[in-house]
Amino acid sequence: MLSLTTGLAPLVLAGLLGWTGAVKLFSRGTVLGAPKTALARMLSSSERAALVLRGVGAGELLIAAGLLAVPANPLPGAAAALLGAGFLGYLGYGRALAPESSCGCSANEDTPITWRAFARAAVVLVSGVAAAVAHGSWWSTVSGRPAGSLGFLAAAAVVLIALSADLDRWWLLPLRRARLRVFGHPLFGTGAGDRVPVAASVELLENSLAWQAASPVVRSALLDHWEEDGWRILLFSGVYETAEGARPVSVVFALDATSSRDTPGDPVVRVSFLDADSGEPVGAELLSTVPSRKALPLAS
Image (cartoon, rainbow, N blue to C red):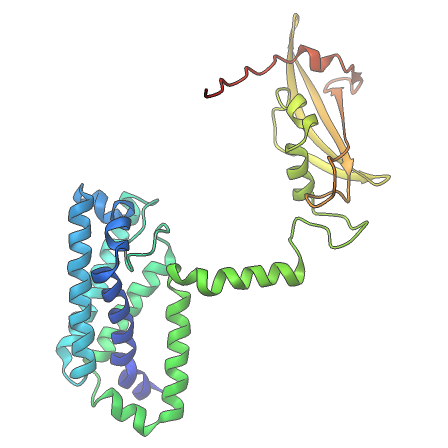
């Protein structure tokens, strides 16, 4: 297995660097995505960041060509290992400097720097070391062990695709959509009369008119919940101002335990206010004491 790995490392690494280098060098995404990268923050210029990314892309293509043409020469593998080490340093600094920025590793990637970017850079480093110490050519390994080579290359391709965030739209999003079609949305009921998760009830509540009316009183997240006679009871704490001062209350909402976002019509929501000290109900006139929200001006 070790000989197979070192023998095919130049081929795998050349495929990865050839793809990322070509995207950086020739894609319009390099210029469009440069302002979103951590490199633009480091250089204080999107234009300079785009130039550096294109230069790195050209270097990746040269290394990939060397790995394919002269795999027995240690120089392309050593250059790839240095490139991987540089990527790791850049990602670490970029994550600390601008964690919301992308790395620009493949130009079309605009997601923040995550563990996947670090893992892919580590793959470049380790594969470069393996290519530098490899003996013989990758084509001799493929011709000598075709079945094992095919399995290794397929596994390597799966790993590299999984570590590339910009390829998620081709495999991860369809996989998630298929899971939702088969198993249903986690916040939806699966049939009539099914109890939906509490998170679904809270989401439904927070989009209701009852919540809009009572939310100025609410001062906490969900504290407790239970079910009674087909109703899901949701408990929050609250406070409102009176002439005598602030008065703590418990805000209790009740809604159908089977209602979800796909239930037709507006949900039926009941709301009650209980004095936090005595437990006695507070009258509905409490809502009239809540200061009305100022309407936002509309653009003409």
